[in-house]
Amino acid sequence: MTSTHDTGTLSLDALLENTMDGIFVMDSARRFLVFNAACERITGYNRNEVIGSQCDCNTLLECADEQGRSLPTKLCPGLQVFRGEVPSARQRLRLRRKDGSYAWVETHYTMLKNGGENGSVLAVMRDVSEAKQTEAELRAITENLREEVSRLRADIQERYGFSNIISHSELMNAVFEKIRAACNNSSAVLICGQPGTGKELIARTIHHNGLQKEGRFVPLNCSALSRDQLEAELFGYAKGSGPQPNMEFPGLLRAAEGGTLFLDELTEMPVDTQAKLARALQDGRVRPSGSTEEYPVNVRVIASTPQGVSDAVASGWLRRDLYYLLSVITIETPTLHERKEDIPFLVEHFVSEANRQSLRQVKSIHPLVWPALLQYDWPGNVRELRNAIESAMAVGSGPELKVGDLPNLVRGETVEIFEGDKRLDLPLDDVLASVERRAILSALRRAGGQRSRAARAMGVSRSRLYRRMEALGIHPREDL
Image 1 (spheres, rainbow, N blue to C red):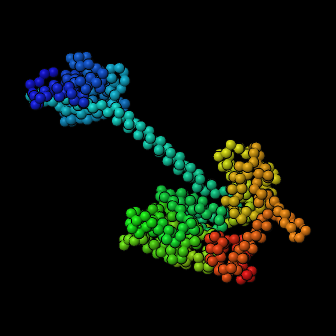
Image 2 (cartoon, one colour; image 1 turned 120 degrees about the vertical axis):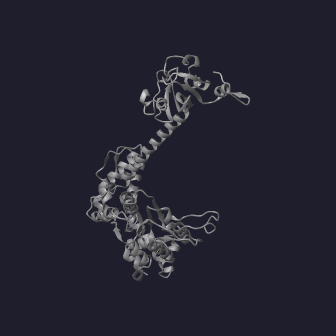
Image 3 (cartoon, helix red, strand yellow; image 1 turned 30 degrees about the horizontal axis):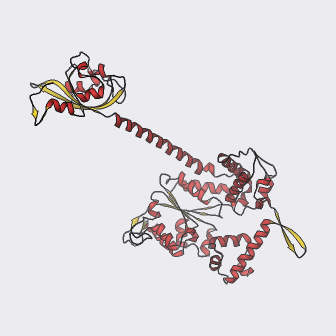
């Protein structure tokens, strides 16, 4: 190829030969007139093999678009430019190299005029094979992520679907009805029940099957934090006002935007913090500590208490205004002692779960296991039953779950106690209950009957002390 043009020190021929992009020129029959060195590198063909030959570009390179369609006549972007249908065209193509391998190129076609008439087409071709491979890898990664998200959603649905709340008890029918009602709206929910009765499972079930399922589920245990920590977590703080001076935190009320904030052990929240929470929920706005600006909040609140609502309000542990805001739907969870008919179904479920996570595969349960499980009172409710089955699976062996695998407390083993020379055989639970009762009464006497002081002295929360007093039948006015 010759040229009379000169660009400083480089001729046009030198420019064409040293560019990284393939440059070629075709006539109206799609035969090659110009074919630079980059075209040779991309296609594997020497220019002497293609220039002047009667072979058109599609026959030589077997061009195809991204849908895999061959590009003869109508679909050829170069011919579309020749016919004047478009002034220029740009398309990503797959072409076959001389060695039979394939390359992906992006080609831009432009008409070259000859005396005002359409003459030939100039095309600039860039090898994008690596980019195409990267795109394919990214698509594969994206597809894998989609599949993983679908799998995780299915797992969540299985874990927190209605079928995962195991019950055949009449007492649970009312609970299921309330859960279904809560799934159909965005109202606040208050769940009351002893520890281990599945309050968080119910909260998660409502979230993952309700109107907020696309948002986050954010749990917060109110008994695990001090007053200042709790307010920082709930309402957030501006720079210079939080535990880390150079950081700001929006707070969980805003972090759970469009989702669900679950407040566990609500009665452990200080009453002045409850007042701030009630104001934020009432106004639908929150002001972080150290800030003068208020921010809107759109979050569903589900809260739980370890005791009945009337007791919590009467005792002053739950402010009435906050109770009115949160108790739009109230769910009371029965104890496992009240629904012992569910124990066989729960045990079957827990054994199945444990089999998936253990080398030991339990296929059957010895008949003597059932009387032990049904006679025990289960003060720790479903959580204690789950732990008991997990323990039995871990310490035992063989394909049958035996009564000896169960924890001693569940089996009702006795402890030797002597009164003088006389030996008394008492069930272990009775011994433990007696010791715990004496310890609580002693702490209450030292605290002058004030439960908060007694709880602090014993290193437990007020709600836990209250629950144990209720379980042990301790009435301060009568027993102190």
